[in-house]
Image 1 (spheres, rainbow, N blue to C red):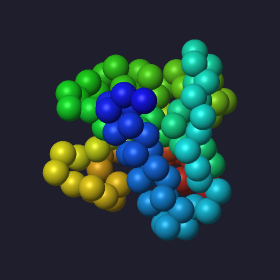
Image 2 (image 1 turned 180 degrees about the horizontal axis):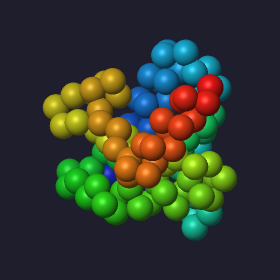
Image 3 (image 1 turned 135 degrees about the vertical axis):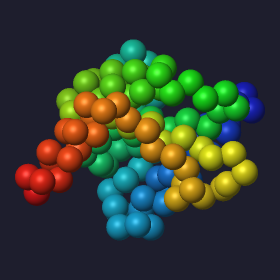
Length: 111
């Protein structure tokens, strides 16, 4: 496994562990699925695409999360990206499109 791949895999594990500790016990890292990828974290009503990269490319990442949400049959895909100099997922950033944010708000109001 390349160093970059290992770094990404570690970040996925950090996110999954943080979500479990935060009261989402069914969360786990998802296996890769190629073009039918459904995100990096399973067990949530949204798709999470985890990113731990030196260069930030939000537009491409959000596009990827949107495609993966469609693959998973859910309305919302988000990117949970690592914050340089911080180790905790709680310190990371979660980015989504405006449309995804509005859908998240709609779902929150319905519940």
